[in-house]
Amino acid sequence: MRRNPRQSYYKRIARERIEILLDLAKKELDKNPERSRRYVQLARKIGLRYNIRFSKFLKRMFCKKCNTLLIPGKTSIVRTNSKERTVRVKCINCGKYYRYPLKIKNKI
Image (cartoon, rainbow, N blue to C red):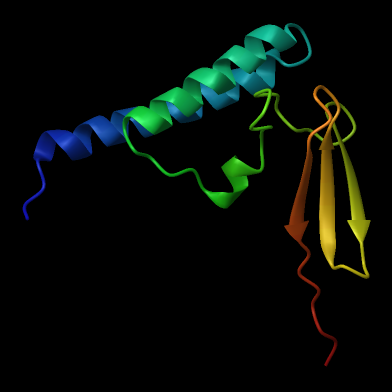
């Protein structure tokens, strides 16, 4: 199956727009949090429309429930649990918890 050259062009443009929107969301977070949430929401919509997968870093950057950027100390609380080897992130805006595996480097 051959790829349509237009398809890759549209995906590249969509990725650029997503990056721009997320940068704008970071800049607007302090001044206007509602606008920041709207930028994140638009970036997610563009990703869905053009079937673009977000990297692990980008996925963990915002709350999936309320579209708030998760910045430790400002909009989220981060805790580590060494027994379970997890990192827990709580969104201050909506209260949703996220748990991610904690990678522990072995001493040799």
